[in-house]
Every structure is written in structure tokens, then in C-alpha cells.
Image (cartoon, rainbow over all chains, first blue to last red; front, side, top):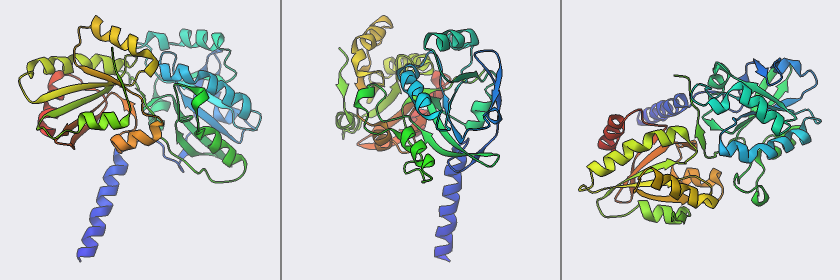
Length: 201
Length: 138
């Protein structure tokens, strides 16, 4: 009886911990979405007929972490788009609270930095809410499996945002390489500092 | 000047056996919700200056930006203890500070007599909410 009680308590504790963390987890299937790209045209995951998966990043114009990672995100796309894993960047910040994150400024930033990937505006924040992401930049590597998109990695790009030259662990690259080689992702979740999202008031 | 501390110095600073409550706020100059809640911390710090409560604002600005952090503090007349935390791989040290923390800032942690007594991820909507949190968790 005592053992059963312990088991029950452990289960209750686990459920509470799980419920507290909203959004997609590794192993779950994400819903397709359709968002406006900086060129004015809507983009959805199903448009990419030949993709094996995606490197989805929630980012924005103004966050220094995001800006520090821009060149590395560009490099990821340039390496992995041809291998079947293009980058999809999504800005979910509320343009009312952050005018620097509005659509026009996204277009300017995309042009300045010559983004080779799509940069989508999640104006209603509905997509961000489904992902349940907490900070920018936040990476999700998803793998296409039939007509489903399964989350394989959530977290940071690498282990050093301040200094790209001092990086020792490239988490996203390792995850995508593993998927391309038919292996499981060794480190499927990582943590990083980032600014919390400004939800619409 | 704003000092730059590693994880060991952070732990030594916040975990002390002196009956003082350490209110540690994780923030950065570029983080809007962080900057918006700093006045609540500053106001309580002034109100409670005769109590055994010590506020530490741990900045997550880049360690190359000590001057910008110092300028921000003096511009706003903030005199709380501030240091920049630079501790290597965040995927390692975030868990060492608090396993429940996703790494999102702002976040607030309370310590007393070497023990963590409270943790809050996200901003406080007003001063009273922050005050209630500290009272409940000290």
C-alpha cells in the first residue's frame, strides 16, 4: 500500500511538472501554419515539397541575442537548406509594444542582412502560442515523417552566444546531422538565456 | 564599474549564512519586461533599507558591455548591487542555478542562509505582486 501511495505521489508530481510546461515537446507533432513572409507572400510548411524537415527559429529584430546569432542562422540555412532542412524564421513580437519588430522593420532587417531564408510575421502570435516558446532566439528542429512534422530538438543554437569563435557545442548542427544520418538526436533539449516574449495586451 | 562574475562568485555572493534575505533579479538592459519591473525592486530596496534584505541585480548583458550597464544604472539613479554574470555554457549553469528555470528573463530567485527559498520566472506586473512574492517565500 505504501509503495502504491509513493507511486501515485510520484505520478501526481510528474503531471504537475508536465502541465506547467506548455507548448510542443520533443517527439510531438506540430501543426502546419501559414504566415506572411517579408516579401508579402504567405508561406506554409507544406509549400516545401522536397524538405526533409525544418530549422524553425523564433527571433526578432531588436533582441541582442537574436542579432548576435543572425550570421550563424544564415550559415545554418546556407549549409542545410540544400540538404533538406531550410531555416524558417518567425518574429512573434507584438509590434505595438515593440515598434522595431513591426513588419516594415522586418523587411528592412531582412534586406540589410540579405536573409537567405524566409522571415515570417506571426502577427496574431497564434503560432508562437502553439510552440509555447519562452524566449528569443529559440530553435525547433522538426523532421518530416509522411505528412507529419515531428519535433526532434528544442533549445539553443550553440553554447556561446557572445562569441561565435569560442563555441564548443553546436547543438542545432549536431541535431540536424544526426537526423540526416538516420540517427537519434543525442542532446534533444538545451537551455539558453533569452528575453521573454511580449504577448499582446 | 560593474564587475563580471562567474558561477562560483555568484553562488558565494547569494548563499551566505547571515539571516539576510537575498533577492536576486535576473535582467538585462536590452530586455524590456526586465527594465519595466526594475522600479518595483528599486522602490522596495529603498523602503526596506533597514531590514535584513539585500537586492542583487544580476545582468545578462554581454561581459564586453560593462560600461553600457553602468551608464544605464547611473542614468536611472539605480544604486543596487549589480554584476554581470558570465559563466560559460548556459545549458550547464542555468540548471545549476535553478533546474526549473528555462533561461527566460526576467527571473527572480530568493536565498536565505544559503538556501534557495523562492523562484519566479517572468516579470511582476506591479510592486505589490513582487512584495507579496517576497513575503510568501522568505
